[in-house]
Image (cartoon, rainbow, N blue to C red; front, side, top):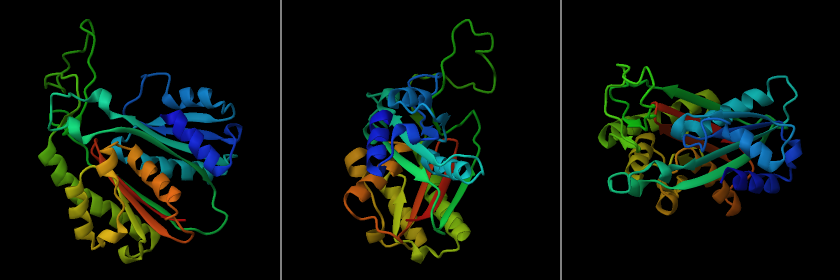
Length: 277
């Protein structure tokens, strides 16, 4: 999925794989612990000149990737183009007998090619985290240790191992309806914008009730909000990238528009990016 999304992004940007200087892949569902997914993508794309990095900030990963890419492009080094990919295969982590969670998630990938702006466009990111206790991580998928692993009974993770994604839905909901508005406000403040100046709000596609509660708290009218959860489900960090692609293909992204992308995820992490296109 990551490779297909990357190929589509490169074609859309008119950029060859060999011209990419850095590949960042956001995923919390990799196929390997190592090698990292970005290196696998690099090899399959033929992007032989690219450095590679994986990040895992769960559903906030795309926003975190944007911030990392901006830092690379403006670092003074020779990085000119960053390929940012978000790819998630959530279904391989699900218990399909658990109807409270398995119906919520899907698999997809999205990608963008990022370059340094040729003019003074607005770009601001606000990222935060609310650390959780290992005794109650709210959203988690715990690694299973080998039976002969000497520290398998380490006492900071006393709960029973379960092989699938686990979620405390009520606690996540309470966190999300506060985190999404806070992240959007932080990013808008850093951008020097009022929320009313945002042309399009693209939230993490986790739950329509969370989105509706968040935009009500922010005073954002529904016609300024883009959702696709009804078609794709919750695809973790991939959803914002896919939303951007859908909007672009539909001709809804116009030069000068101000977008706010806001998300939250396991960690607990949350963040938002304000981008002028």
